[in-house]
Amino acid sequence: MFSQHGFQKLFGVLGARFQPPVGSQLWIGAVIEVVCGLAIAAGFQTMWAAFLASGTMAVAYIQFHWKLQFDSGFFPAVNQGESAALYCFVFLFIACHAALAKSAKQNAEAALPASSKNEAADLRPNGEAVS
Image (cartoon, rainbow, N blue to C red):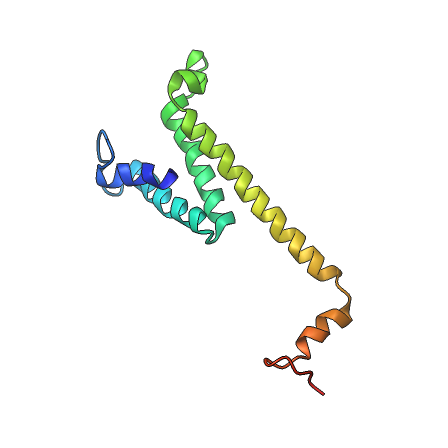
């Protein structure tokens, strides 16, 4: 769904109201939405794609929905920024979860005894032990 919002802005499809000019901030945001949305869905560089998507949605909410109005316009239900706020926090959660999973994997590998690490290195591609 995230990448569909980018396709709406880039190509003017799926009920889009307008197309931003090429190179504008909205256009760059749309490119980020398409690329990061597809990367997250495919599981390619998920941590970085989710982090970039989270930041993009934070900018979208603050700059285009909230507009630093300290009245009732602050709330997402009033300024129509529900999806931007939701995407921001969901993608931040995904990025943090991916970072923690990567860190846990590295720590688990570091905790393995040296003998079990070397056993895998002492095998030939066909599975025979190297003498």
